[in-house]
Image (cartoon, rainbow, N blue to C red; front, side, top):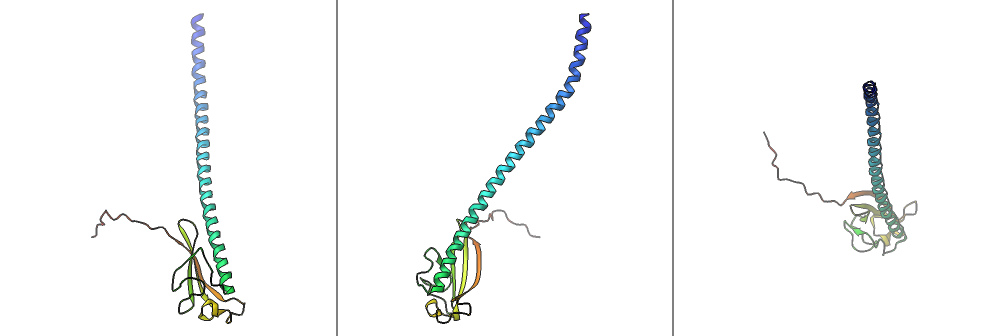
Length: 164
């Protein structure tokens, strides 16, 4: 009798093994999907933080550009203390090129600049433009506003390209 009871219990163990295998497989699948979800959520959080920081930098530079335009419209000669001039411009807002075009760069983060190109009213400098204001009362006209990358890439040229 004892031999019959031991053989019947071994059959129950084999039947229990298939369900245990399926349960283990399902649990491993759920755990791996949970881990992938957490990794994906963390990557999305890092990307969102990166976009938030870049947006903050951009709107900070945009606010500086708007302050500069207000000072330019008012005829102030101390416009734009935190920006750099580019083309045909000396120090101050009153310095413009021969055609009255001022290009100014505002830092929009460590890897980006906001570039603002303005033409003063009548192609004159900002102090003389107050008398020649346009129909909307502004002493300037924004020609271009764009963002430029300040990253310099060093390309690897050690592998020669084969030509036929």
